[in-house]
Length: 101
Image (cartoon, rainbow, N blue to C red):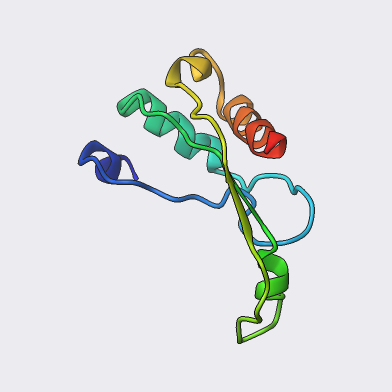
């Protein structure tokens, strides 16, 4: 992820690790990824919320079903906001920003 971002690429991470209704706890390692990226690259993290994907591709389904999906893009989280914070705190900040969307 760091190498891709260092080369002006983009990285997409699904912090909950799955699609589903409601907010879940982030997967272990999400804060670590954000922390590493922040320390090495100092890049903005863009929170994005996707709604309706659990109905378009329900658990156990092999085929996508027609369903509207809503994508909401939030304001970027500046790297300074993570300064001095641990991995869990960083994950919490990211998840809180996603929940606001």
